Amino acid sequence: MAHRVVLVFPRSTYRTGDPPLGVAYLAAALRKARPALDIRIVDGTFLGGEKKLLQAVRAARGDVVGVYVDSLMPLVASRVAEAAREGGASVVAGGPHATVAAETLLPAFDAIVLGEGEPIIADVVDRAIARAPFGDVPNVVWRESAGGPPKRSCAPYRPPDLDALPFPAWDLLPMERYLHRWPYLDTLDVATVGTNIVASRGCAEQCAYCQPTLDSLFGRGPRRRSPASIVAEVEALQQRYGVRGIFFHDDTLTTRRRWLLELCEALLQMRRPILWGCNSRVDCLDHELVDAMVASGMRSIHLGIEAGSRRIREEVLHKRVDLDRLESLLAHLRHRGAHALGFFMLGSPTEDLREMLATVKLATRLDLTEATFSLTSVLPGTHIATQMSADNRFALCNDANTGIDYYNARNFSDRASLIGAGTLRAIQLGALAAFYGHPRRLGYVARHLLTRRGMMKLGMKMGRFLKL
Image (cartoon, rainbow, N blue to C red; front, side, top):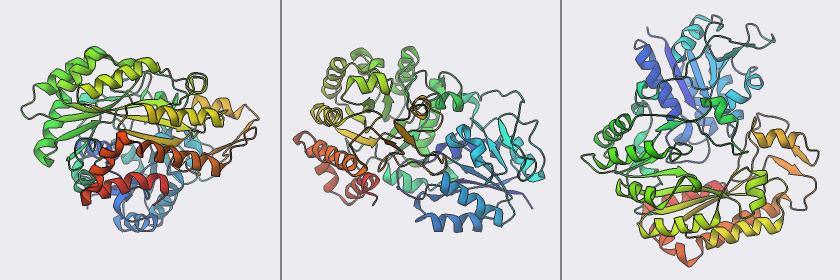
């Protein structure tokens, strides 16, 4: 009988239209390298909560259970590991949180995979099945005995050639449910069928709230797929699922102009046109580039604006945003029929009430169709975490594995601030009300209220901030 490997995506809250591509890539790489294995994915997104997720993990009865761990779900991931151990499984963790806080997870897991797992997943599974040491497998942390010191592999590691990776194992995911909830082109039509793909990994920027964690995961600077590889994946999604839209879930798609123009040309030449969106920085875009993107199908772009205060943007978050350039860019996007979403953060370290209200005022005034207002949270291993841990003004959550919910709460306190958690939440909810209550967004809101699917998607988006 074939050994069974179960990969778990332990999301138990916040239903979404974003399929867990990282887990699906691992499943595809493992299936290619070890075709005799019985490989399954347990995706908790639509199971109905943590209890049912744990039941599904127990029922899967994996010989090896691999668990994706990011900073939103370490507690649930540890409980998944416990449930898997009950059935005698070897349990391995991977993902962003596992990479930057590996030793803190070792009591719950047999081994931790650091960074990108595709090149080593087959070897990790082989050792886990045999209950053998991981010393000759690169980028692994493990203990050889309970309570023993952590060991870290020194074997050389080579990042994967992104073009050589098989497409994600979509067949192991509840893709129809993700397609039904996909939100990225709701600005055009809430019924658009679409999904996400990844064209590059890594980021060259040094924003304080996500670096050097991204470098730890993917190495320094972005690595990109060829336009031909990307188009092949889009065409496969069109044929298999009838998608009309895609969203590039890269951290920043637009940092290399020449490559992006080649990608736009390749998308433009496809037999069946595709609409698309992406994440970008303001300083990466100009009118000529936007024109090429729109011509190839781009209709939605997400921009990290973060704060209305220049001090917060530049001195605290290390984010450069020229507001004059931003306004010109947004006007040009609107003129070309593309929509923009702005990412904003509230409650950053040292941010006062006046600066937060400036963020709300800026967001409401800008020609944006959508906006999110998250509460600044400190991710383990980032520049901002290092700075705050050395400043007695701030009290960080001491337990790296309690999890983060940047939709609803900060994971630090500011001893010098008079703004409490309740006031911060009131500002956040007031920002959402001010933004979406503005006449400029009434058409967007009304579009969601006209159909059952639109109302479902609106509820999904609101639920993140209201804990619905």
